[in-house]
Image (cartoon, rainbow, N blue to C red; front, side):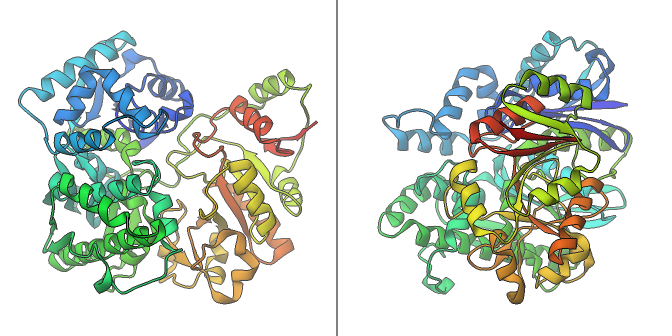
Length: 566
């Protein structure tokens, strides 16, 4: 039974599953080239159908999510959604009454599902789907946080786990606590949208001049450039408290936004970012600790947009009673399409476990398709087919950075060795060149490493056991003091790093790291997403070559071809 999952909000996308297998999962941004695109995911649906070799008429069950008031209004009036997209991404001049827009959003988003919202949303989506050729199908709506919880529980390696979701909000909820046991997922607590720690961090992101729902990671990185201080000195410490399995906000979102703006006005933004990050970490550690204590379950899986904060994740991982952990790799709303499909499959067929060895769920391209594109650009690039792309790339990485494109595109926000820009892990000059000339990012953003799983203990200080291995770049760690100088291109100012620990799930990429190890003694490279900052990760050979031209990058390995800019 094929199930199509769709999500038409922030970071829209689609996914197809069959039994306990994920056939395809793609987000709209990769196909439209609009970062974190919104709207009905027509392109993603077509791409997933093509990958699966299916036609619309082959799909009988379609899973969707979120029927809250604001989502219903957005579906009824798509121009409002489009306007907010440009406003949020700051693709327009600052409008008058900017604060009022935020206040209105915070008021309206507190309203969860309303009477007839399911029927209205179903009618809208049914019309869109029928226009694409879907015929005899049933639409199933999954509540927002149930979709996040299904992602975390059903993709995790655990048969019994505590499952926690934390984000801005969805369907009137901002966080949930669930128990996954004997194939069943049961919610035991839900935190109202009014008490959202995710909205708090979104507000902080906006106030320091960054894009909400996109730049929260920059706030986390910038916080490390503040001087440290004790939590008791934190001016934000009373904004939230944890009572049992409840997170409680002191102020309404509107009052909170106003107070945060006034506090931020009086200090450097890195100090304000530190306060916010410190509060987030303290609240989440207490929340997770209480959940572990109350349920007695020591294996924890979590998802939701706040789970992208790797520093908070690192603090959670160090909770004494936490034994093993799993974070769903596409933790934000971009993972909702797959989560909705998971939950519908669970309800219809009782399936609650998936083959989740990797996240290479997107399209791939044959050598014939690639060579066709190369021939179209032969006036600007030289290329030749090679036998050992991993070895060739390792040789290039001794003196330069390299674009690396092969296999199926990754699902989620991280490049994991199929759509990556690679560089030597210890070369700060090349790192700075990547930041300022290629990626064009803020100087304080760190780069992450890919390393051989077998070498992770040589590099990382705080791995409890081999089950800690993270192949999806979802967790923060600390580098060992004696190795920091060798890998200074991939550690942050506090010696933290966000590694991808590579094993047999990506054999060619693993081979590249083994070639590096022959030269350097450890298998590690700088790995950043294959894109210019503010653009989505590249999807197709044409996207990759276009980025090569725009950045004037000399070398790219594309499947079994090496490309050199003329």
